[in-house]
Image: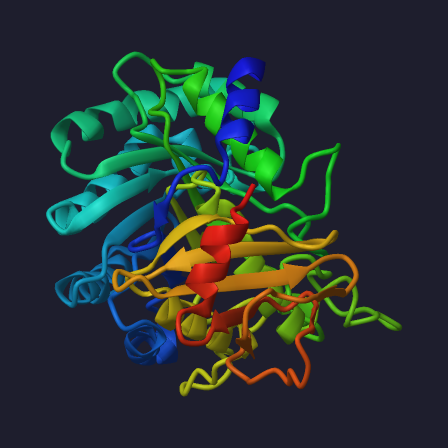
Amino acid sequence: MCRAYRRLLAEAYKQPVDLAGRIGVAAHLRGATAEMEGQRLAELSPTPLPVLVRFYAHETPSARAAVAERARALAARGHALTLALVQDRAAVRDPARWMEFASDVLSRLHDVAEAVEVAHAVNRVKWGFWTLAEYRRLMDATARLRAQYPRPAWLGPAGIDFEYPRMAGFLRALPAGMRFDALSHHLYVDRRGAPENRQAGFATLGKLALARALAEAHPAQCGARLIVSEFNWPLDDTGVYSPVGSPYLYPGQTLGAPQVGAEQAAAYLLRYLLIALCSGLAERVFWWRLAAHGYGLCDDRTPELPPRPGYRALQFFLRETRGAHFTRRCPMPPGAAGFLFEQPDGTRKIWAYAHPAPARWTPDFPFTAVSGLGAPLASKNPTITLNEMPALVSGREGSLSESLSVSGSE
């Protein structure tokens, strides 16, 4: 596994990457906001994005049926559909109950689903699994469903956070006949800080390489592909709706900490996409989720789902990278990162940012620059100051292509 990890790190950013179909979002499809979610999805991207929809074992069959109908409608509009089957303690204790739930969802949607993720946050006891034996028992039952519905890709084990030794344990606990087509993981790097922040020495890039190496180390249980099925940042002043806040309000509670501001979360979102996808390590990533008060691209407190900065940043990124290939990393000053994209007509643009401190960059070509939120950046001289919000830097009249072809890259 160590050898695979080193190889994957060495190969990162070395091959062109087509971003088409790699960026997805999760949709809730429940309550007063359900219909508006479809409209916001349509406005978000010029082409239909992959969508992940969770189904919960504790919900009633009628509630599942309503969500399944809306999910089918999204698939009919061209959205690649991933189903996520979420257990509860009752389903873990009674595999027959799990099978009834999972069979119901798959019978309704297997013909239009591209993938199905089995279970959720398996390494957190609050989601129902207390032992590996319980997980193995549930997967033994699930293997029968996999044989019955081979068309969707099967994803798992759907662990959360940087606990890969435990994920290896869940993979080894899989019974014969149950194999995942790809490793799925809820991969947070630092839910209260930048994607470049390190945990035990590993930032986003290193954790992605480790996850891929983990999949490669278990070929009998998992394909060597990686799907990040959940990531986000909790937002300031959202109280109990934040995934890292207190589950209740108490006297003197500081509501802002430890969340991040909405524009900061937007910057982190773009950087996570650039790192995870341009490296070639993740096949697809899903933001959790489109609409939610504490962490959504849109605020779900009103049926109109007002967009937040993260929505606008992703919308701009998707528009500007449509049809483009990431080509290579660019030479940049210390503390800055640059990602070169090329369109089919040969047009080239660079997404660039600096972390943790601003960096001054003097490109050797005439340029225009726009922030990741789509606002023009002032550039009255040949130097631009990069900061944590990625900027889209474009050359004029072919100068960018000529300059990069001369200067080369790492």
